[in-house]
Image (cartoon, rainbow, N blue to C red; front, side, top):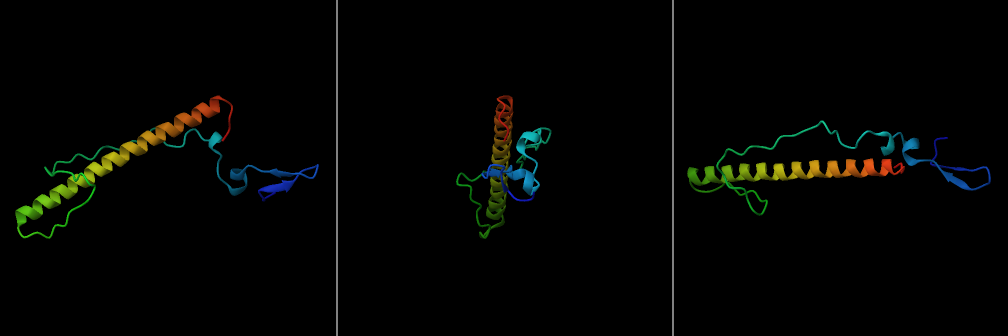
Length: 111
């Protein structure tokens, strides 16, 4: 049956597992939520710029080339720093999710 719920033998509604009827592989059948072999490298900032402490890029419309060059370098440094922070957060979250799923599976809980 292609519906999420059907009438049981005694007249009560039984709920089919949601992933089964919408075509998604349930988490308990997946090896991991994230690909543990997937890696990303940090961006190496060689610009000599200083990352923004406020996560903001600066306008490059200044009056001299030296000022504009410094602003561009600072913007690239900010982007590199932000990318590295986000990458590290994603990797840590994926590891935590995979660990939680493994613990739930070992406790016999299928999600």
